[in-house]
Image (cartoon, rainbow, N blue to C red; front, side, top):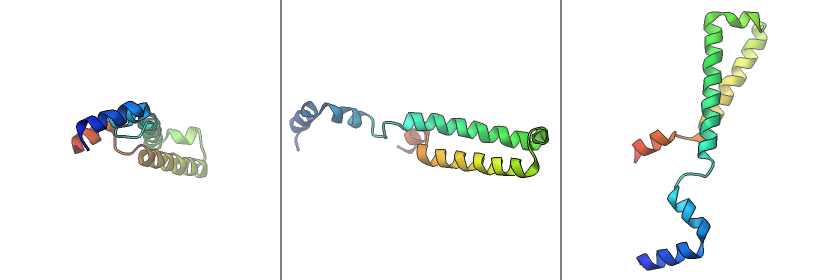
Length: 92
């Protein structure tokens, strides 16, 4: 396919140009923000555990259940978001 044929395809399909400019999925930025938030929340719960402050807010069973949820959420968002943009650039 020649260069001119590529231009013709791009002119005929304006939505295609955005996907060509951005090889990653369109919602990666949003997913990365949620992943960062989940990571900060996990860090907060880890600090809550290390300091012992969790005892003021939770019973042991409640805290363990909450901690499992927080860690699971962080792992799921990290999987959804995939590698960060910095990691993508470094990989190229």
